[in-house]
Every structure is written in C-alpha cells, then in structure tokens.
Image (tube, rainbow, N blue to C red; front, side):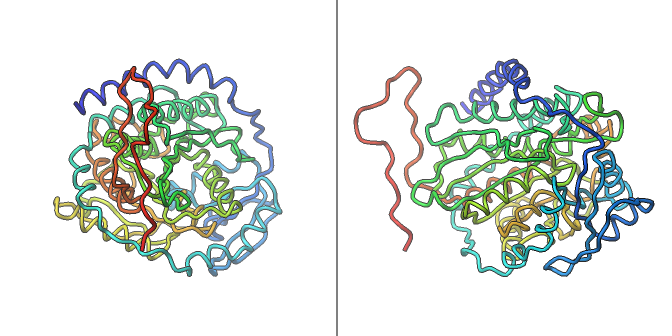
Amino acid sequence: MKTGILAKATAIAGMLLAGSAALAHEHGASAFDPMTPVHVAAERGTFEAALRDFSGQVAARRDALGRPLVLATLREHQVADLSRHVHEVERRCGGFFAFATRAEAEAFVASDTALRGLRAALPEYTIDQQRMVEGWLPQVSEPAIRATIQHLSTAWPNRYYASAHGHAAPLWIRDQWLALAAGRSDVSAELFTGCSNCAGQPSVILTIRGTDLADEIVVLGGHLDSISYVGTGNGMDAPGADDDASGIATLTEVLRIAMAEGYRPRRTVMFMGYSAEEVGLRGSRAIAQRFATEGRNVVGVLQMDMTNYRAPGSTSDIRVMTDNSHPQLVQFLKDLFDVYLAPLGHTRSDSSCGYACSDHASWTQAGFPAAMYDEGPFFPLLHTPDDTLENLGGDAVHATIIARLGLAFMGELGLQTRVRWNPQPPGRPPSDGPPRTRPMPPRP
C-alpha cells in the first residue's frame, strides 16, 4: 500500500515537471547585474581574510551578542569571493548576511532581537508522542530520498538564485509537495517572493494548518539553491546534491510520511525551501523578518542543510549545532536523538558552525527559537561540480537518519489531533453531514 502511494506520488511529480518548467518563465530570474551594491554583515576575521585587498566602504561593528563584525558594501560579483573563502579556507558554510540597503544592514546589526530571543523562556518541550513517532520511523524510504536528490541535482545544471534553473526548481518542489498532500483542504503551498535581493528566486512554503493550536507554528526548513565556482549564471555547474538537495529531499520524505499517515497536527506545521542561502541567507532572513513583523508565534525551527554525507572515520552519525541556536531547543534536539535514534545504534556529537552559517541563524536573529542537525564533517566536494549523488556513494542511507529526526521533531512539537485526517475516497462527493474531525479542547 505504502509502495503504491510512493509510486503514485512519483508519477504525479513527473507529470508536474513539464508544467513547472513552463511556469518558471513567469517567475524567471530578474536581470542580474554583477555591479549591484550588496551590503553584508560578516565576522571581522572572515571578511578581512577573504577580501584583504578590499578598498570599499567598511565599518567595524559589534552586535548585541558581542560578536566583532564588519559592515561592508560590496558588488554582487565579490560576494562569491567571500562565500568561497568561508567554504574553502574556513571549511564551513554561510558566514555572512546580505542586504539590499546599507540602512537595512545597520538596523539588523544594531538590533537586540536575537539577544532577547535567546534569553526568552520557551514553551516546555516534551517528548510524549512516542506511539505516533515510533510508528513513522520504519517508513522512512532511502529510495524515495535518493530519487529526490537525484532529480534536484540532475534536472538542471544548477539551482543558483540568479539563474533560470534556480527559478524552475522551486516550482517543481512546490508541485511535488502539493502532490503528496493529495488535495487535503488543510494543506496549502505558496511561493514566497517577499525577498528584495533574491533576484526573484522564490522560497517555497507548505503549510499544514493546525487544529486548536493553529497560531503556534513549527517550521522545518532547508535551502533549495546551489552554487559552484565553475561557470556563472545559467552556465554554472552546481549540482548541489548534498548542498542542499539532500536537505530538501529529507524534508520531502518527512512530508510524504506525514501525509501518508493522515497526520493532523494541533500546531501549524510549515515546510520551507529557502531561496538564496548561498549568497547571504537572503530567503530565510526575509521570511523570518516577515514573521517577526507580523507577530507570528513560532515555537521551534529545525534546519536541514546537508544530510547525506558520512565522513570516513567519523566518530558520530550526526552533529547538533550549538551556536546560532536557542540552548533550550538545542537540548530538545539532543533529547529527541537520545529517545528515538540512540536505541537504533546511532551516535551524536556537538559542533559549531560560526556566524550566519545556515538558515537557522536567520530565525535566531529574528528572535525565534531555532536549531540544526548536521550530517557531520562536511562533504569535501561542496560548491563544486562534483557535489553529486554518485560521489556521495550513490545512495541516501545517511539522510535517513536526519529524516527520522525530522519526523520526531515534527511529531513532538506539532503534537497530534486525536482524530486522523480521513479524506473522501476519489470520486465520492463531499459529505453534507458533520465534519469528520473535531477540535481538541484547550490544553490544561
């Protein structure tokens, strides 16, 4: 039965690909000017090492957390130099935030929102949905994750934010996610275009509307773009199988199982594919800032960035990032691992990734609790034409670990409505009788 569901979803996704390619035209890349000013906030040491000969506008700053930063005005073509240094020399990702205006960058660094958010008391994080979550874990499909990684890393030469390919990929992801939802009325998806410096590349947001706690939001996300230092624009050779097709594939598998199981969360659960992460966390920052401005109540954010590489000789299966994260949520990620993955023989360790290393940092800077699981020591072929599924071993075994952790995060934070979603069989008109579900009473 579950194999049939997976095969049907795969077939639907294939049919939707042609439509997604056609629709990409209307969401095509904005004209990209390599001389456009870009205003970045970066760690001082990183910036000075990456652009030591830079002679433009630079100002030393220190943020509310006491971190020594640099605010600098670059040109778009120089952003690649900064990104390349962070990856190749510092052996990490991210490293900076990018802004469309200097005023926006100054306000961001001066804000104490992150400090207040990190000090804020959070809702109690409990682990009490074991029966549901443990029923999900065996359903994680390595072939399903592998197929999504393969598609995302081969259907286009790249998913670069300023290329036509980078604008087609989000449409495919949106359509794939909606196909898994199979018409559920409580599930919707949108292309988020509220990022002023993403060259028009949209983020993807799928929402499972909660029942009685719908104003409380749980986010699972990963970035959908890719980058390489070989080629430019549409000609860039950036398959990005691990970074971050693997994260999007892992999210897709979590969603597939949730939909197949008729999961109805009490809290609203959102799946997000962020645009333009590789050039300064632009898409996730735009969403997080929008949510903060609107006063949204986000109770937890999980980032999935690179999930499918196991370094030879690694002493642990996954790492929990301890920086750019709320310490209470970090502990919750460790507790989830210890309850659900450790009994299966998996191991974890702690790590840190530096300033603005991935999209969870955008949420932390906006005052929301966020944290990240990581695959372990980074895949050495990231940001090159060789970041392919074949060079990851040809399978997605390692990503199944973080998929299970994603299911645990969603199940425990999203909670469970007592009555499952029970859709009408195909072809049967909607019933005129009472609804099949009822809201839960308020928590005591």
